[in-house]
Length: 495
Image 1 (spheres, rainbow, N blue to C red):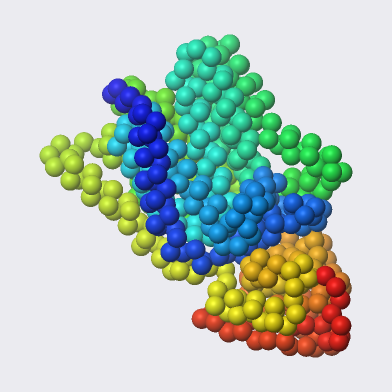
Image 2: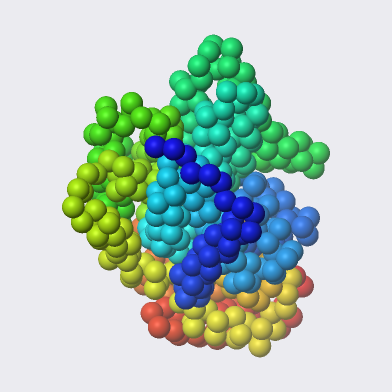
């Protein structure tokens, strides 16, 4: 099969525009579905340009590249819903275009178009409506794989493309540390496909050196800010503490796989079929691209197992390679003979229905009840909360900080970090936050909670609220409610 000729500039712009429009139409209806992590990352990104650095000033274990994206988006679009959801739409649209390029350049136009048009839909599955980290990770990795495939197909100076692939995987590593699994797998695939030892060595060195650039830039920045120890302790050591899962055993993690794979079973079946047809496909021009995509998928699976498949959105990095391999099965591995086009269209239609059948409830509900939180935010402003004043969101509703402009009362402010045991944190972190006597406290309905919550922490909080705070407002919504407390002192401490 001959690789199709590349399209002209304006046609490429039109294709990207069409994919961007498709992404916007699919994701815009769920713009009000904001998860706790989305709002949390946006707060850290909002505060970074104000001199409050991640880790030292705002605790988390994610790499700094993630917060830089939110800081940049916040400077352009603000810290509200537009920045949070706009960033995700941009990355999903770019990822879809990257899949089109991989398919068109290395498989066929139908493969590329099938993967590209299905990706925005699959990006909504497995909590993808409000799981930004995996969406950003996929964006960088898709273009890293595109560069790696370019290196594998070159005979003249392939190390340049290998270096570009390494650079993009390095950027992906600064979004989520598990990108190291996919990067290692793709590096091995590149080495296997290089024709001579000299080219293998050059490609590997270029990949590794370029891959270190982005992490080293951030290391240099935090070193200059005298906060390298905080970066290392939180984004490396504490993050490694999560690799084994949040108290989830290896066998329990494996048991989670069938349920997590449910929305992507049809692309997975296509990938398995492509693998079964490997003896025949390996003799054709698709052998090199298929091998690299299979290694990419293998790296993503290793990362998923290492994280014990704890949450649905951990499965999202499997989607890009699975869509490509599934499309190859549809257009290359299957022999339909009669009624070929109808059969392929039926398969693609079924593939489009998979995520909708498996994840509609997840699409509608996020981490917070928007009407209730909006009412609580308005009540807080009416009660005297001004932008920059300190507040503490206890168990849900982190978007409260973005909607009111309030500053978290302390370095630790994610509900999971406050109420649960978490790698890198010791003691009662909620009690420590309350020791600073934040002027405003937002407490969601305690009858709804996380599995990991420590009941004794909430009990101590309620004692503190009874002794030193007054109820300023109660806001109820569709399924949740919020109580807004204010210090009982006549004068609220300045923010």
